Image 1 (cartoon, one colour):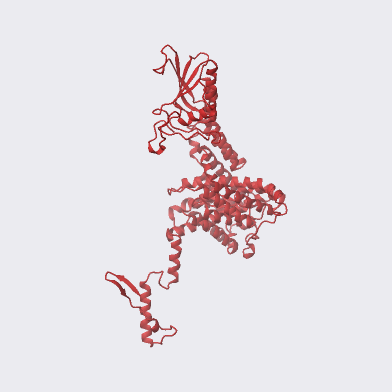
Image 2 (cartoon, rainbow, N blue to C red):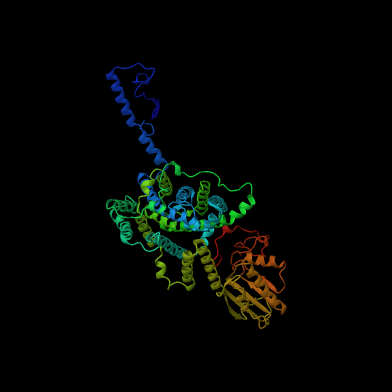
Length: 628
């Protein structure tokens, strides 16, 4: 062997010559004393080498693990424990939503494993926990009841493909259009939905009445104990997630005192928690006529798949935005990756006869509160849940449902935006109404419908407020050009506020073509022409003046807007005059259809429509005050 020194390569003799090493084939056997000396020298050399070169399997394995997960053993342990806590919280929800969809509880559990693993591994950010969700289960319930579980899995598979398609096209970015009042209504409504779902565990499954006697007292008592432990344990230790410790303590209390507690096995049945390889799902395409009747099958599945894909993505992307605020790690979630991750999870779920799912805000809250900071937590949740179904099912089945109900109550308390109640009287009434309506629709209908309704209401409210914001200041006889006839009368309308489809009628009502002089100036310095409707409104107004033999002078229009007006008319009529000033004209673009105005170039800072000078690039000059 050689090693480089200051003087050059130097020979380094081997610690133990191979031919004299004890027990090496082909070498002479040494006496016992020499063999012991050689072995000691070899051991000393091994300890001086780095772990990657020493024959220490434990050290090598540890180095490989933390080369893959470079945040260190403490962060890995914390994320694995967080995944363990979420896996326990997944069980009652997955079982309950499986009943909603009309399938076996074991299908709900394996769906949580498939969706949770792939969404965590390939999704938009760390911290999100995905599984078999109620919002998607409600969509598929009628399909499963009418055509059976095979068609349900086929629709889940198709929904996954649609979600990947949406991710590739970048449609996830449109979640940014969801206003803040809609987000507040979303989290409030979801907190109520999660809270209401837990109340079913306090009812007798046979009579539907409130639990009484020892079983009822146990349910209420252990739930209260669980809530108290979740709040108090973080003050004692943060080494283990409080939710996980809570489950262990409540389970031990129930067993030690032989309390008549309702367990997960009581809810899902012994068949779900029998364990063993027999509970593994079947992998393959759903048994539906893909080839024999493809058009009929696609026509049947596509409406359900499209609805499930949209509902799942809306909830997942809103959860992603929520986690961005919860995890103050300076990172923003990738909406396109989240769409693709959810799609991959649903594809695998469909191929394993599952019911699909999406991100679950309640379990995500448990994940974040338990200390999750990386994707390892979500992956660990899926792996631990899968191993628990196969190897530890009887043990998991003994967990009292009251322990998980108490945890979910605390999740509801932290999910609900209590600040929204304090600001209701301080914010505009339309925003307060949107918060209340979204919360109500989330509770009585579903999340996707609530978000769509809230976004539409917010958009209409905004459009109405903007439509009433346009006004004009009239200046008779002002702003007359120096070269004009001094005896001619002029009048200036100085506009303020946006001109768009919602304000075109109010814009037209500002003017008096009959009483105005022959020359009218419309100054757009404090206004913005926003869309095609605004362009048409300007042309219509100019035509009203033109029929009366009067002229309209348009000032301080963006070069883009001026060019679009020219393009729209072909040639501007003599009564519609655009007066350009490259020094004072603002710079902004009009929202229009490029197929109608293909010849109009984007506006530039030092150019007007009449300018014949070479066109400089926009980034060569700083943006002027008053430009968009």
